[in-house]
Image (cartoon, rainbow, N blue to C red; front, side, top):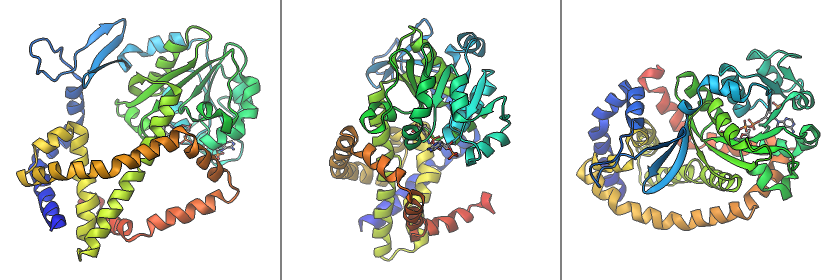
Length: 405
Ligand SMILES: NC(=O)c1ccc[n+]([C@@H]2O[C@H](COP(=O)([O-])OP(=O)(O)OC[C@H]3O[C@@H](n4cnc5c(N)ncnc54)[C@H](OP(=O)(O)O)[C@@H]3O)[C@@H](O)[C@H]2O)c1
């Protein structure tokens, strides 16, 4: 009864949203530009445009009632970046998804960049294909760390623990150590990553995959990133950290701490970004299937409609807009059921955050990802998801999208 009602309602909701969806897809950049052209909120207390108080290139904006200071790409035009890093060699250590994206964006921004990876590995070949030249801009990790003045430590988090003995001797006075995650430093009791006292230590953490860091940059857009300063020995660490945040391709950067970055990041990926979403998709799909719905119907009502229609609209306009622009039936149902899901999941999020903050998640990740048979065990777990009926149905549904034919 509930599934049938919800299913029909959401379909109506999607139909109600179809016209604006088409419009949005036609003009994504202008939509983003419109969303970013904040107007000062001077006339009405009910005005919802965030107010801007420019201050030496910083902007203090109202995030739903809390004031935060952010930096934007416009605060660090290329000539300013070139001045800030005029005497620097940025050594990107690691060429996984972040190393690849950040090094190429930095290079395209005209900065002096070298890449350091282990010779003969997958990353070495990938870097060569992207135009990094052995002995000129591509080195083994030891040599790159020696040459770099800013060491951008972008090995996998488990790799950072293993590689620390190679990196540490090259962290001489005056250098900067950069991360894209607070993981190694905050959980140093488990990782052994304790930076020397006489180097700047900063972080810029893109809020998205490396593939998006690169593709948005190439489109003239930008990922959002957080920035944190762990040690400011030079007195310049703060400005250089924000500048690095922009130079790697961010649209806007906000300030955090190493601890808050790692706690929120681990919570997010285990929660709403991946863990919770897979759990929720699976639960709803199983219920629909058990009640006799076909795989096609169960997948469309669970995943396809979400990712193809509703989520892009929520991304562009917000859930408040979504609720205000769907059918009255869908709205009533969503308003009634949201508190139920909130009540059911909040204790799980509380438990998750506690497990992150006490280091259990880190220890588990380090132990599991350092096992000699790590790849085989991971592949078996991933295969289980890929072989599930829901995601096999997804392959068929995606193949039926007109643009994929
Ligand atoms: N992935 C994301 O979406 C994302 C987003 C924000 C921040 N971050 C953070 O960015 C950092 C890099 O993440 P990533 O996802 O780009 O990493 P990744 O793809 O897992 O990085 C793999 C890189 O690490 C190297 N590596 C792994 N273990 C190594 C070892 N023992 N010795 C030498 N090299 C080793 C690999 O080299 P080979 O090819 O030679 O194996 C490869 O270059 C992490 O701190 C991560 O938390 C990631």
